[in-house]
Image (cartoon, rainbow, N blue to C red):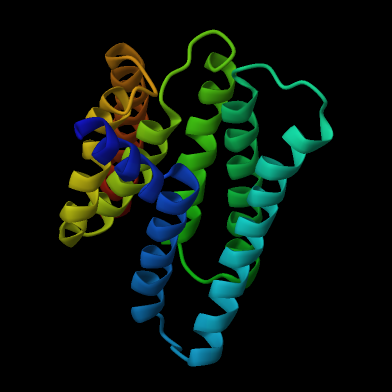
Length: 199
């Protein structure tokens, strides 16, 4: 029974869905505080988010179908690569339209954590479910503490993956450790920027 619940939890909060959920929440949060708030502006933002997501999904689903034999770690690698490229599309759209700094910061930390994940994946199968749950939820927690429930859901993935039989405990904790290192680095950098702007 516990295995079935963990598998369902892992499927419902899969990386592609959880990052999208966090992105949607962040878009709404940032739009809410926009100087010129309009339905058309929200639609444009959602269009950029959707375009990036379409690119990510095409890479994630398309590359394994085009390649005859994908190594065991290949699906995680194409998922991460797709997410990284799709998030870059979102970052570029946001910067081009100058819609604010929250979504580009979100994109930057996700792209940054994707690089070591891609490098490690062929050698060690750390949990991408954990990594891509904790990083976006942690970022949202930095934005507003009202996102605590989302972060708790992300932390639940650390338990769900080994209990579902998808990863070992060490692989799940490895995903958490990598996520926390990047969140701590982001927080440290954000603190330095705040100190510079005050002085």
